[in-house]
Image (cartoon, rainbow, N blue to C red; front, side, top):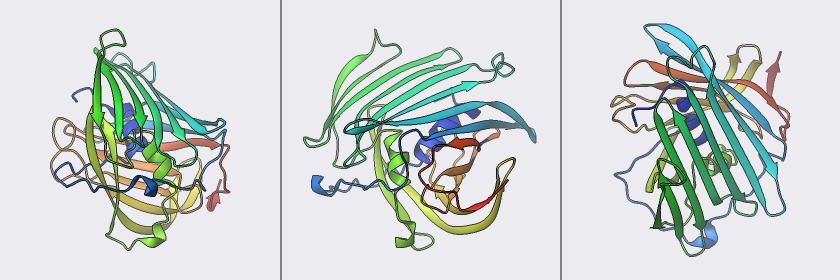
Length: 278
C-alpha cells in the first residue's frame, strides 16, 4: 500500500475511521442482529474534507474528498470523489472514486465499487454482497477489464469501506465508557478485518478553522502497521457530539510524515450542528 498520501488518508480515515485488529477473532453474530436504525443522516447530505500532508513541520494542502448521499426506494447510495489539487498533481496525482449501495433497513452494504488512480497505481474493486447467505462476489484487479472474480465467505454484519462510516455515525456512544472499544468489521481488498475503535470521551469548544467551535466526541482507531503507518502510532478522530456524528478532524501518522483531514463544508444535514458555528 505504498500509494498512500494525504488525500487517500482522508478518504480512508473518513470512510473507515480506519482501524483493524486482524489478529483478533471475528465474532459470529446472528443475521437477525445485523440491523442499525438510521437517525444520523438524510438524502442530499454533502460533506467536503480538505487533506493536508505534513513534511518537515510544514502542512501542505494536498486535495479534497467529497461525500454525497442520495436516498432511493430501499437503499442509500453514497458516492465519494477524492482528488489532489492541480498544484499537488506534479508530486502525486490522485483521482479516486468510491460508490456504495447501502440497505436502508439494515445499513449494511448491497454493493460497492472502488476505482483508484494514484500516481502510477491503478485499482478496480467491485463487491456484491449477499448478507443473508453470508458471501460476497468480488471483482478485483488493476482495471475493470483485468479484474478477477472471487467468491468470499463473510461473517454476519460485514461492512464495506463506506457503509461502515454511515453505520458508525448511528452508534450511541453514551452506551460506552471511556476506553471501551466499538466493534465492527469490513471487507477490504478480499480480506475481512475486525475494526476496533476506542471511545475516548467528549470534548467541548473544539475549533475548526472557518467553520466554528463544536462539541465533539473523540475516538482512536488502531492502525495497520507496515508501509503506511508506524508501529504504535495512533490515528485520532473528532466527530460532532450531536445527532449527525459528523467527522470534523482526522489526524494520522504515516511512515513518512503525517496527514490530516479537516472538514471544509457541509450541507443537507439531518440535525442542527451542536456547537458555535461562525
